[in-house]
Figure 1 (spheres, rainbow, N blue to C red):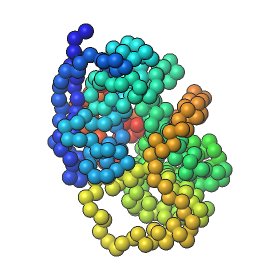
Figure 2 (figure 1 turned 180 degrees about the horizontal axis):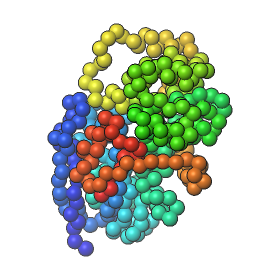
Figure 3 (figure 1 turned 120 degrees about the vertical axis):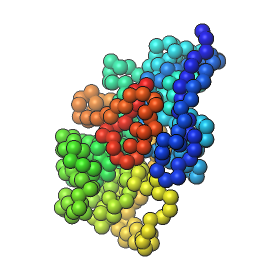
Figure 4 (figure 1 turned 135 degrees about the vertical axis):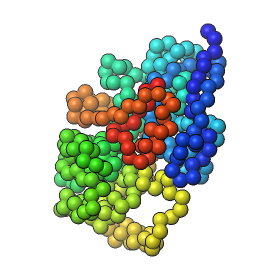
Length: 338
């Protein structure tokens, strides 16, 4: 078979604050045939996630930055076109990490798992039954540790991580208070069964949060930072747990926020209230992945956990979709259909 034409989006320049379209570049090039152990993929769906903003920076983070001129990083649902790996054959559908491109030549050992569309929709492998769902599951299991009767608060609660966090917490007997932006997202949280749903844009948000948590907060699943954390901090109970999954309100910051140094206040609260604060990524707890697949698969089949997706068509629209994601414009798991 001949070489395959691939369309890809690469990082053209590093953002200075909020990303702009010029930070990305659309290219085309030919991909050769797979070598021994390799698989040629056609990517069908691309996941867009907040962590991608951090990968665009040159500084230290929990993962290496995307180099200038390199394909933007991202998880994909892909179809095997050609294979020289014994575990895969043409037509197989797989969960991969093939990036922002229509095709990819990968080592078959890097493919995460085969997918069966008869069991669950393919796109769930990029959301509730994939990295975001596992992030929620692992962060709660290892750090949040919800107990019956406790109060959990989660920011960005209408997103794929936050919505899953709240639903799992309720399955485990905790109260779930979700924070999102706008009436439509609040209504969605109520449909999911959250005990309370708050709009962080409300002028009296801090007062609403206090009223929704009359017994204080035992677990705060942090996805946002900013003024949401400011409202949460005074309400934390002794021995509260704070899994720090993301800080999307600060991803575009170029300098420290103005105002007095509040670090001593935070450290004082950690000390006096015996708080546990831990940053994590899902790979920290990868040994839980088989357990996650079993439990989440059962919950999804039994309709105990629901999900929502925000589908964008066309690879060329991925940059604007990611920019919108960082501004909170998406509603549900953001996926590009290629």
